[in-house]
Image 1 (spheres, protein in one colour):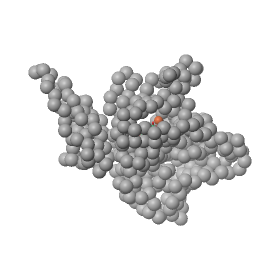
Image 2 (image 1 turned 90 degrees about the horizontal axis):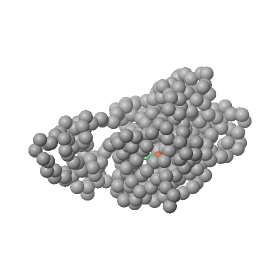
Image 3 (image 1 turned 180 degrees about the horizontal axis):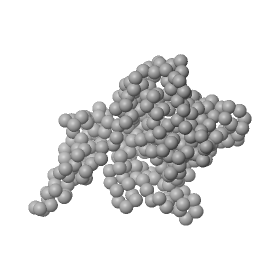
Image 4 (image 1 turned 30 degrees about the vertical axis):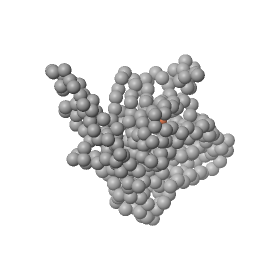
Length: 331
Ligand code: PHB
Ligand code: FE
């Protein structure tokens, strides 16, 4: 555990953005770039990336509270969720950085790193930039010097339905009226609702809904929502456009069901980042992502994806002990 884990906000720099420190890591931004500095065995290192890439990745890391295990912002920087503590790293899963001895990984209590990341996201997101939106549907991350905030977008919370979507009392039925217009990419998706003939007396308990119509009104991209739970099995629906802003490194198998259009996945080795596979998924395709890889999706046209997750807390140990293989099926 790192001894110093403080949100240190220095005076803003020339461009008006605040700088931050957490443990041995330092963060700053200017008009176009984000800079991450850390001490290494071979001297002080500075890594930089485009501010939009950083903010889109940071938005997911914060909103998903570090997700399942690993979030890579790019080939160098990221976080490992150890479910209670979080490791922040630079170069630790990059073969060349490891070989050169210029990597660093430090561990933090989850609330501390979460609070720091929220502050960074809040200060560095300018007015008009929505890190959850597709690039065509938001203003830019670059407005020169620090220029306002977009707190509505970055503090957006998933709406929680009170009942299964479509049943009376459901609070998140998506309609034009409650501000969820059909996305421009899904104008051809039928908005018809299924006909349900219910035995008298069960009208409030049995329902059906048009999931495609529902997803067609999603206003964010690359942000899976839990839509059904069966024990530890979660169905998470999401609409995807442009690039998944993170490379997700798993500690368990997950499954993808491509519901519409197409996503191309790049799959890399978990430890080194070496390329391992390219997977092209077209509507109707089903694929599993193994436990020992990281993956990133590319969706040219907004598409619908079902991510099937296993939240069993014992599953990490089952993989680690060899009880489960890193992949789910032997053909
Ligand atoms: C994933 O890491 O598996 C993932 C994350 C976000 C998405 C889709 C897939 O929207
Ligand atoms: Fe994943």
